[in-house]
Length: 415
Ligand code: HEC
Ligand SMILES: [Cu+2]
Image (tube, rainbow, N blue to C red; front, side, top):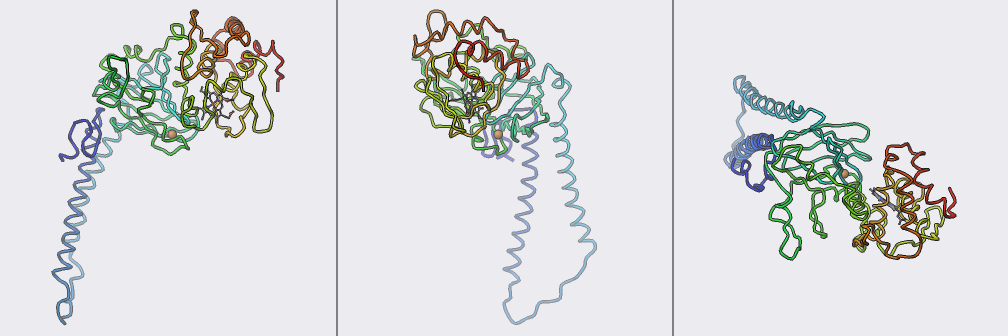
C-alpha cells in the first residue's frame, strides 16, 4: 500500500491528493491492483512450478485427471465473486459520490462554467469573471458546468482525480472539493531583480485528455518561456467570494494593450496564434512588423490598407467575423467571437505590438508606426459611438456597429 497512499508531492504512482475524493480513488485503485497482483503471482507461480515439477521425465503415461469436483468448483466461483462484488460496491459508491455534487456545490453561486475549445480553456465564474486560469478555494466544493465549443475534449485535473468529457452542444457536470492549497506565489518565484522563474511547486495540472486536433498538447498546465503558467489550477485559502481578487480583470484600470493581452489569453487566441518569432501555431503569428502588410485570401482576393483605420477594421472583422476572409495558406479554423468595440480596441493594440507594450501619457497604446494616419482619432470616434452593449447583440447588428465608423471614412468596399 505504501506506493499508493503516500500524500507527498506526487508518490511513485500518483500525484498529490488534492481533492476530497482523491484518497478514495487511489485506495480503490490500490485495492484492485494488489488483489490482481496477488492472483497473478499465485496463478503464474503455481503454473510455472507445476510445469517444472510434472514435466515428462520418463516413459510413464499421464494419469487420468478427475473430470469434476463440485465443491471445488463452487468454491472457486463463489469466493472470487465476493471479491468482485466488493470491488463493484466500492466503485459504485465512489462513482456516485463523484457524480452527485453535494448540496453546498450544487447552487448556481458555486458553479463555474468550463469551456473547452481548440485549443484552450476558459472559466467563467458565477459573478461573470472570465479567466484562463482556474482559481478555487480550499474546502469549498464547486460544481463545474462543462461544455465544448468545437470538438470533443476532456477536462482532466490529475491532482483532483477528476475527469469529465467536454461535449459540443450539451453540458456535462463535475464537482470538486479541493483540500490542498496551491497558490501562485508557490508556483512562480520572483528574484530581487524582478526576474520570474518557475517556483518550487507546480500548480495543479489541468490537461485535455481527449485528442482533439493538432493543438491538443497545448491544452495543459505548462510553464511558458515568457514566465507564466498556461492554464494553471490554483487553490487559495480563502472564501469563494474572495476569489474575485484573483479572477477580476478591471478593464478601466488597465491600458488598452494590457486589456488586449488579457483577452488574448482569456479567449484562447494564444492557443492558435504565436506572437513575434515564436514557433508557428495553427493561425498566423502576430508580429509588430506584420502591421499593415497586404493580405491575400484563400480565394485570391487581395486586401490592401490605405491607412491604419482600414487595417483596424480588417483586424476587428477578422476577429468577430473570422470566416469572412481566410488568409491564404491557413485553414478556416478560427471561431467567431463577439467582442465589444472596446475589447476589440484592446486586442488590436496588443496584436499590433505583441512583443512589448508602448504607452503614451494618455494611457493609450501608441502606434509603432505612429503618425501615419489618424488612428487615435478613429479610435476615439469608435469608443464614443458605441458602448459595450453590442456584445450581446445579434450578428448583423454587431456587424454594422463594428464596421461602420471605420469604413465610413475610407474607401473599403463591403463584400
Ligand atoms: C482555433 C484556432 C484559432 C483561435 C482560437 C483564434 N484564431 Fe485567429 N486565426 C486562426 C487562423 C487559422 C487564422 C487564419 C485564417 C483566417 O484568416 O481565418 C486566423 C486569423 C486571424 C486574424 C487575421 C490575421 C492576419 O494576419 O490577417 C486575426 C486578426 C486573428 N486571427 C485574431 C484572433 C484573435 C484576437 C483571437 C482570440 C480572440 C483568435 N484569433 C483566436 C485561428 C485561430
Ligand atoms: Cu482538447
